[in-house]
Length: 101
Image 1 (cartoon, rainbow, N blue to C red):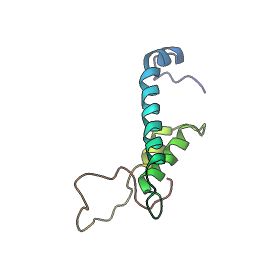
Image 2: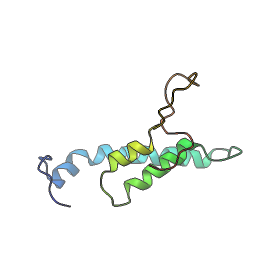
Image 3: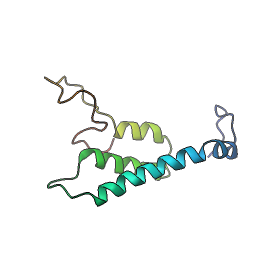
């Protein structure tokens, strides 16, 4: 991959500065998925949020660029139609019933 002059650090400097922080984040995701594996199975399909997260994790290691945009789209509701009432305060964090972006 060619050097992007908008990033003033070398690869080694980025690794030295940020590796441990991101190692912890990957371990946190692994712990979440392990807890799901150990939990009692619900009837029906797997939760749409977990499917979106698994798809996002696959995107991390697919070797393609532009990961942030592609993952953000996988975890964003792209609907434009207004709804009558929100089912809760806040957001789900993933689109319900949509495939990958």
